Every structure is written in structure tokens, then in C-alpha cells.
Length: 349
Image (cartoon, helix red, strand yellow):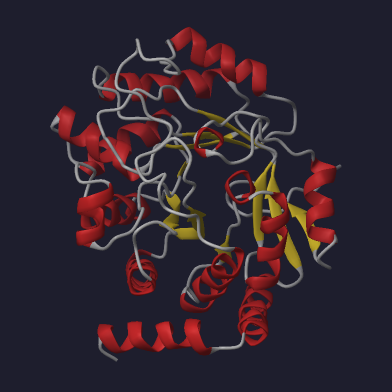
């Protein structure tokens, strides 16, 4: 089937399928893949800096320089201290993303991984650096993506997060993030990571200036890439939040469209095992609803360690206990399963 016919098929399904039927179809797929399980982990984030060379219109996180109100840039000792302050026994993942700092090169990002690996127990997986950050490391150092990823892996990087994908459509990308790496480059980074044994996630930022066709196109591109490299563990639909950014005039997408976006994501991405619902961005109640529309992962404890979405108007001081996460899943009739970064179940002794 031609790409335009594929897009037309899924747009029609999104627009014209009864919402309850769509939920049932998505639920059938998620249960075929994951049974009655809803996954979560014990994790926290590290955001080394928010001073960034990129000027994405949807971003509420970035600052121009270190003298701007609300900016920060961690030293190596601050990175170590932050990890020590957030870690508690039983944690299995640290998630590291931030900005592309104008005055920091590959050596800094490598050193951060080294410090984190030295500071935290070996059972804590390091999920670090978006494809955008990897792309800039490659450009600044003159090294290939393969070499940059290999250097990071040698120092302890285990998994890539899925950030920076936004919307793959070229025209939309030119408007919302014109100086960020292209969709082709984003996909190249992830497929290269997969080729050297680094698994990753994929994302989509929806609900801003894109339309439904752009969302479907994005999902189909992820599906094609997965068929090539089989390295995406999870897909994460990320809802645009409109506070403190250049797109604040846009009304945020409604709950119904969010649920339908999750359902269509689950149906299209039949070659990706997990659909993650990121509760710090959606809120706890909407996150719980998405479990009935194809999602099977609710991220983790977070421990009030990320500001990317809270600065855009989402949950302030995001954190959930293990009991909170279990209740969120159980109240939808699902079994909460604690996992590591590779979706292995954690069995408590």
C-alpha cells in the first residue's frame, strides 16, 4: 500500500471509528503483547543544564545563557552530588537529558556518564542523551555518530531515551524546531545505536501545529525504522503543554484526542512492544485513562527530578511512590509489574 493510502486509512480509522471500539482494538493488541501487565520502574532524572543553543518554539525549559533567571548548568561535582541525593536502594534507572550547551563538547558529556557510572551502583542503568544531543556531539567533535555512541557505551551508557523526535514532517519541523537535527538524522542516530546493541525509545510531540496526517506519518516512519533495526522498546506519545513558550497561544489538545492518539499509536506500531504513558506530562488521571487505550507502561517514581514538563505547566514536583504506581494500574484491572530498563521483571526477594 502506498504511503498516502496508509495515511488515509489510519486517518479514517481515527476519525470514524467509535471511541469504544477503538479502545477495544487497542486493548486487544496491548494484551496480546503484554497480557494483563502494566510496567513501571524505580527511576530518577538528571538534567545537567537548560542552557541551550536550540530555540524550539514548544520548549519552556531552555535558557539562552547561564545568567538568565531560571537557568542552571551543573559542574561535575554537582552531577555526583545530585545522583547521591536522589538515589535510593532499589533504583534501576537514571534518565539523563538536558540541553545542547553552547560551551560544552563531547568530553563533558562523556565525563558525565563516567561520573554517574562511578557514583551509582552497577544495577542502575544509564539511559542518556537524546538523538539531538548525540547529533550535536558528533558535529562538534567531528566524529561519526557510530563513534560517539561507541564512546558513550564504553563509559557506561546503556539505553537511549526517545526525545527530540517531535514531529518528523519537514515543514512542521522547520517551524517549531528549525535548527534541530532532521528526522532522517534522528532516525539515523537510533538505528546506529541499535546496530551496536543499544536499545532505545521513540517519541512524538503531538497537539501543537501539526495535523492528524502528520501524526500518522510520524508513526509510520517509526514503524518502518523498527522493521529495519528492531531496537525500539517503547513508543511515548508526548502531549504539548502551552505554558511559558512561543506556542502558548495554542489551546492544548483535548482528552478525547489524546486517548485516540494513544489507541492509534498502539494499532499502528504493532512491531513495538510497549506504549508508554508519561504521567509527569499527562497528569496521573489521564495517564490512568490511557491504560484503557493501549498503553502498558507508566514510567516510574521520578522523585521530583525533572523540570522539562513542570516548567511547561504540567505537574509540579513530579513524584510517585511504588504504592501510587501500583494503585494506578490496579484500579484499571491490570497487574503492576516492576521492571528494569530492559523490561525484565524485578523479583523482590
